[in-house]
Image 1 (cartoon, one colour):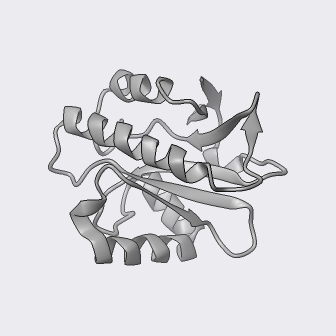
Image 2 (image 1 turned 45 degrees about the horizontal axis):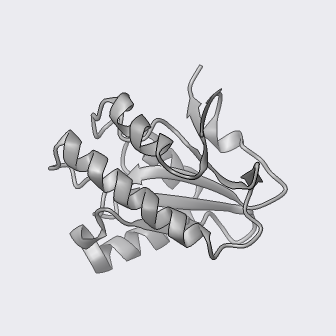
Length: 156
């Protein structure tokens, strides 16, 4: 189920673990768009992401890396590896489908994660529609096909 929320993705709170997801490249660069905001807010998570990318590179496409935002909070960041900047929109959509499936599997082993009506809740911006330039309706269809509650944050 998708729910659209007008507001700041980073303001989402819960008494349980919060998952903030965003689309990433496999090069260890959170350089623009929402990724740059993640880098600024969560430098220790950025380091984990960058180190992982430097070890695995393009093999990460279609996968997901879940890292703690920092040592103190209950926030976790799901890095969805959807594009290497050379992929077509249809390839990015396919990598998004694979990344979301990988995230869903990883969430099965995480305890005390935010849920709604028995399904895990994920919070994200309108992924792929910015720098990766994928029509939102294409990514939206993939997200709707998951068995997750997804809060999509949009800016006022």
